Image 1 (cartoon, rainbow, N blue to C red):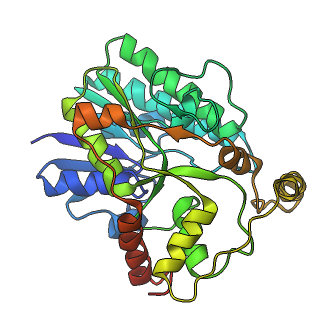
Image 2: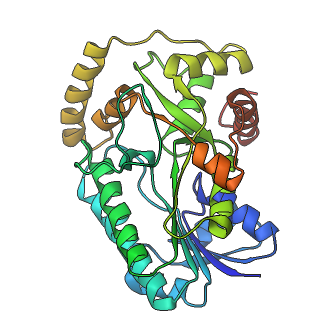
Image 3: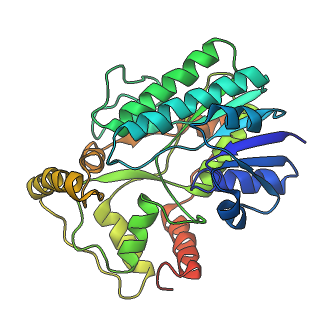
Length: 328
C-alpha cells in the first residue's frame, strides 16, 4: 500500500478522497494548519500533519516519503478583502506543492484544477480540448489559470501529473464552506430572499473523489478530465430542494440589471466594512457565463459516471439534517 499526502482533506473534494484511500488501507497524511482542530473531522485512519501550502518547509516535510500526492487545497470563493490571497494560496501554494513533489520524487501528482481554465462559448458544450489563453475576468479564475500552468510546466519537466476539473461541487462534507453546499443549506432554511439569474454545472462530491482516485491509477501522464453532471439554473436547484424539504420555498429570480447593480455596490461597501458582499461580482459572472462542460472523456477513459442530481441531493440534504445545518 502507498503513502499518500492530501491537501484540502477537510474540504468538499479532499475529504472523500482521504476517506476512500484510508478505507482501502493506504497510509494517508493530511496537510492541515491545525491538527487539533482538523483531527476530529478527518476520516478515520488519516494522519493530520501540521503545515500549510504557503509554507515551503512544512510542505517538503509532509511530502517526504510519499509516493502519491493529491493537491486539492485552495481558495474557492470569489471574493477576498485582499485579492493577493488568491495568489498566495492558489498560485504560490501550488508552486510549493509541485516543487516539494519534484524534490521528493513522488510517483504521481494529482491536481484539482477547475473548469474555469477552459475556453467555452456560453450555452455550448465544451470539453478539455482548449485551455483559455486569455486572462479570465476574476481574481479567483486568474489564480487558477496560473496555478494550472505551474503544474503543466512541471509535467513537461517530467513530473507524472494528472489534472481533474470539477464543476460546482455539492455533497456531504465535514464543515460548511462558501459555495454550492452553503446555498443548498440556505435554501432549505428559507434564507434566500431572491435567486440570482443564471446557473451552473454541478457534480456530487463522492463522484469527484472517485474520479480523482481512478485518474491517479489509470490516466496517462498529463491527462485532463472534466468531472461534471448536469447544468442547472438556480431556480431548478431551488425547486429540487423544495421537493425534498417541507416548507422550503422557490424564491423569485432577481432581474439581471438589479443583480449587477447590487454586486458593484456591495463590493464597494464590503471593502469599507471588511465583510464579504452579498453578491460577489465573480460569482455573478460565473452564473452568467452558462458553462456547459462535458465529462465524456472521464466516462470513456476512466469508467466514471455522475450521480443523478436528485439522488445526490437527497443524500446531501440528509447529511445536512444530521449535522443540524438544515431541517430534516
